[in-house]
Length: 290
Image 1: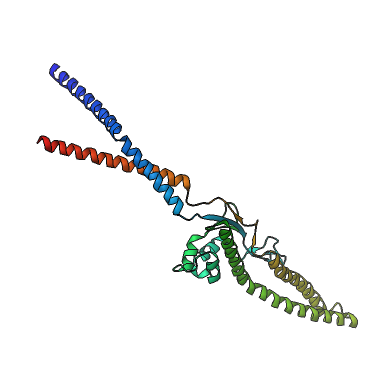
Image 2: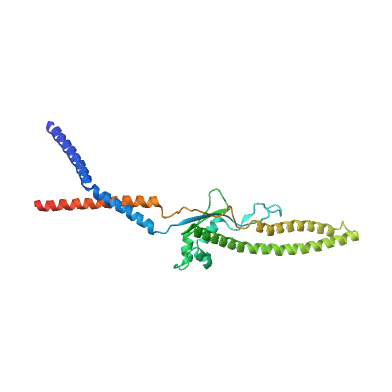
């Protein structure tokens, strides 16, 4: 038993010695290799600076766009809902603008994509459309350019494209409302003429008279609703919440991130080279002793 205890004690001492030797080896290695490691760290920073110098800066322009709306009658009567309904939901707009076919040659040219292979596809991937939290009828549009002005011009072009497309979507509804409005105005004129004739003949209590009076009231309500639909579209078209904002500070490349990655990448490369050199010396020493 005493022999086992002695063996365990000796094993523990050997482990402590090995740990101490390993730590001393690490410190010795770092002391001998720190110049190599930091030289490559400085080299990594130099590469990062060169990357920042040759990489074009990217600026960002932001716009918050309200969806076009159209008046909608309530369920109980022909009164128009003052809030209106969206021509298309923001999620549908985002899905539509992710297709390259949504962009015209003029817009791709303004956004600096002209001459690129499959320019509409590149533009559809470069812009960003998101839905702000807790807002049901707004999308946020972000576009990018090599200058704040080019980013803003691209943003304006995409906004005008969205505005034009939503105008095209609502146009058939407004046209139908105008046709219905003209028909109701004509019917109203005939109904009023019939009531005037009935008043002159003294038969104002006949069933036809009462029916025509009810029709007049109905037509007046419907005409009011249809006029509101036509006018509502003019005041509730696609619009900006605030002017488009283009920052003077570039969003890419990110200097701090690039410099940090260059420095630590250089340190890691220097460490690997120093370890490789140390391993090579060790192998040569073992071969020499052999």
